[in-house]
Image (cartoon, rainbow, N blue to C red; front, side, top):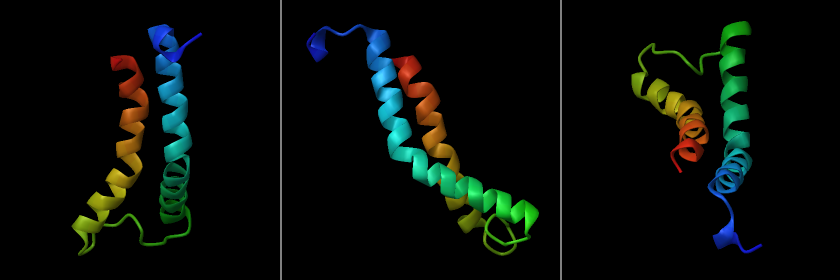
Length: 75
């Protein structure tokens, strides 16, 4: 079957799996940073004098997640 004749559900599954492959490593890194901040006490996710750094790290983790959940549903 040609790609142009695939049903919409299949396109949603393909786009979700491609997005998961692309953002798997950044999500894993952000989760490791977040858990090390909570358990070991590192200073990756703190706002002490570095609010812009916190914002960048938050978007590094949260932005790909939004597209994985919303993009296939909106197709």
